[in-house]
View 1 (tube, rainbow, N blue to C red):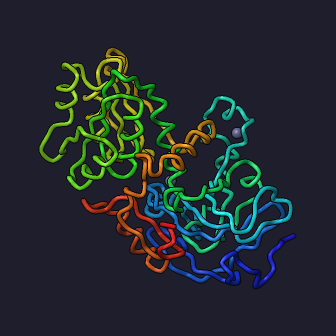
View 2 (cartoon, rainbow, N blue to C red):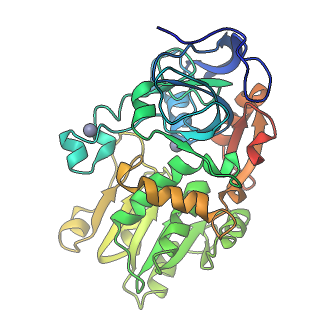
View 3 (cartoon, rainbow, N blue to C red):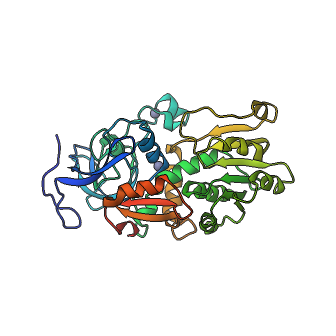
Length: 376
Ligand SMILES: [Zn+2]
Ligand SMILES: [Zn+2]
C-alpha cells in the first residue's frame, strides 16, 4: 500500500508534484536529464526532497565503467528535507532536515559480527531510490527511503546551525575515519598521504587528529592551500619534489610509519611501498577497480610492510562521525571549504564531467536540486 497522495503540502508550503527532474544513467558515459515520476512511498518509508548531493568517486566509476546495469539514478551523499512520512515511520516528521544513508548493515550476519559491515549482504542492498533499480537517487529532486533504512539509523537528523552541505559529508567522512582507524596511528608517527583531492584532505586531516605528523603530497598548490586550512603544514609539491625522499628525510631515514594512497593510479602503490618504513602500513583507499598491480612481495614478507585497504562506511563509528561532522562545523572541521563547485540539477551532466577530470581548481563538487540551499 502506497501512502502517496497527490498534491500534498510540502513543508515549504508548495505542493509535492507528481513528476520531477532527475539525472538518469542510460549506459556507459551516458547521463541524461529526464522527467520521471516522484517515487511513491509505502509504510515505514520516507519521501525526502533532496537539497544537495555530493559527487563521489564511486559514482564516477559506475558511470564510466558500466559496472552497473542501466537505467539508474545515482548519487548517495545527500541531505534534504522530509516531505512525506509513511505510516508507522516512527520518530520522523515532515519538515525535518536529514542526511540519508543509502545502505545500512544488518548488524547480525557473520560479516557484521566481524565488523566488516561493507561485506554484509544487507549492506550491499541499496535502500534509497529516485526510481529504477535503487542506486541512491541523490541526483534527483526527491528520493524514497525504504523501511529498513529508516528503521536502522539510516536517516540522521541534521542539527540546527549545520548546513545541508556540511551534513552531506557524513558518509565520506565515515569511510575516511574508518580507514584512519585501521592504521592505529600514534602521536610519535609520521604519515604520508598521497593525493589531496577532497578525500585526501579529509584523510590527512583525520590522521592529524591522532597527533601524528602528516605529510601531504599533490601536484597542485591550490589543493595544498585548502589542506593548509585544515592544519596540514607539511606539503610536498609532487611536481618538483620526491615524496619518498621527503618521507625518509622526515623520519631519520626510516620511511613513513604509514602511507595512505588517495589517488587511483595503480603505479603509485610501488611509490607508497617505497615510502613506508619496514613494519609500516600502506593503505589503499582509492583502488576501487579490480586489476593487476606490481609490488615487491619481499617488501611484504621480509620488510614486514603491511598492504591493507578500506572501503565504504562502518556502522560501528556512526556516533563518532556524527559528532565530528556536526560538532566540527565552525570548530576546525568545516568541510564546506572542500567544495569548489555547486551546480543545479539542470547542469548535473556538466558537474559530473568536471568531477571526472580533476584540475587544480576542482575539489568537491555538489549537485543542488534546490539551487543555493545547500548552504542553509
Ligand atoms: Zn561516496
Ligand atoms: Zn550483516
